[in-house]
Image (cartoon, rainbow, N blue to C red; front, side, top):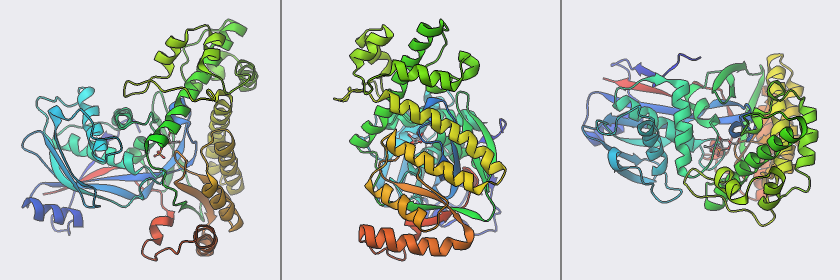
Length: 470
Ligand code: NG1
């Protein structure tokens, strides 16, 4: 996997009918040669929620829904992109485009991609070329299916191609993951990696620090069905806070654990994430670490003053080092303190469930995969606090309707569930969920045209690529 190159450029047969977006681009820009189409898929995560930024693995696959950007390289450093989904036009100069648009603006994902390559010195701002184009998407937005990362990846690949630059896909995924934080969420690297490196019919076990990919075959005769709760998991200020709070809580849990380890065993390790406390490094089993965590996190939620006391560092230093966000601000302590213990329990048990799910998928053990998904959902709800009434109703109805496993997918706080369903009952499953959740519980009649955006089986698909039309 390490020698995959981004962008993957595929030359389209000049006699083949171009994609509709490319035809539109050619009409707009009066262009009849050298047009490109960047395609980046969204993803569904089977299991491994909120483990990525903790340095533990995830198990998503790229889905057959994507963001497309049809573009031509600019003669100068202008990036100009018009959304065909009614989000308007965004235009900026690469050299001057570092200050963001308003929080939540879609143009920030385009700027984030550009900024990532400039800051890493992959593309030199003084000589950079931009691109002009149009974009459209088929990934439901604010649904936990990574439409934002797909936009970052598509824009990033367009920028690389406009500048004739190729690079290792793993490095590219790392850069885009870091740069997406510019849009306000302290996310991990799952979404960009799977959008870039997805593979048809395969899930990806992704490990972090350093980024590594392992293909895992999906189950025969079964499908993963996505059901949208229709609660928008949008990246509003409060959703960003809820996500970032959990990132900070995990950093603090790691800090407490490191201090406990030194105090108890004298072992001093370089560990800033929960995933760093593996038995090889610490010399302790996970059970021992859990006992140690239970003691040092006693009384959780904990105010930062108590944490400071337990680890022997000043409150100011903790705030500066552990509560810092990528935009330069510091996370403001919640009134009740930080919920370190429950977050720790979720992250370490979820990491184990990912490993067990990989094994269960490999041996084709459908029942075990479903049971692990259900346990993951319970932990997301009880320990990580990222479920909501609608997601509870939807997972309950899915299980009643024959799903073998059902859980929220993505950041949570709304968005979609992922459901493991035997292919032979797919249509009755979809019919039952449509009636029981959408009609009876939510009281909405799904427009038949829209139904496929709300309730749909997904195929594991290839990752991002660029088509060249000469
Ligand atoms: P979504 O659901 O796309 O907001 C977010 C993070 C992931 C991961 C999941 C939770 C971003 C771009 N994505 O995904 O890295 O942490 O939450 O597992 O921040």
